[in-house]
Image 1 (cartoon, rainbow, N blue to C red):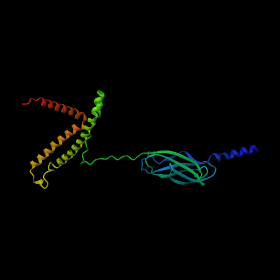
Image 2: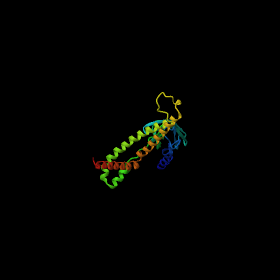
Image 3: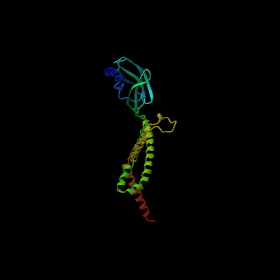
Image 4: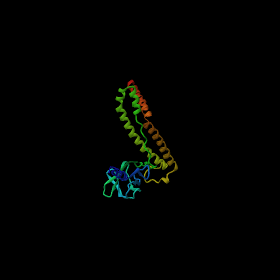
Length: 259
């Protein structure tokens, strides 16, 4: 009797251990890497190692949100590859595939994490007619050098540097706008800006040449001024020289004898 029970258990063991389920590394995408907005397919490879046919449903979810379902029908010892369309957002997604039998009971489930890349940010290009504003160099390096020599002096001068940097930024924007005006007038041979209603075709060439030279000189002056203001390594030493020069002139004026 015991021998009969042992042989029966041995005969039934494969049907208890082997059943319908997922193959190894059975969840994968139709392409890699994936960028947000790409349309891909989620593939699941199933196998039925049981001694009887299997019928059920495959349910695929992204976290708690269901992506879709597919009916499953496999013969004994058969296999099946199932796919569902997916258009993911950027980020990390935990995809869960659950294999359910005809009664809705989960036979087996598989999870896989897929990382979706964000959309590349398009490079913004300014129109050719619009000049890019010059970058005003910060005085942070100068303040750091002063701090290495005298922290007290650096602390006292910090508000002054902040104020001057702010003024430099405003002056740089103003110069940028004037540079645009100068370039536009040069493009029109210096004739833009004449009295409205005057026929430019009737003007002598010498007048056009005069305005062209004038706008050219103005453009060069603005370019040099923009360089001096934007470059902290040039601006601040020059500012110190001007300051001491004015201090010297004030001292000389104060010492001037009165008659």
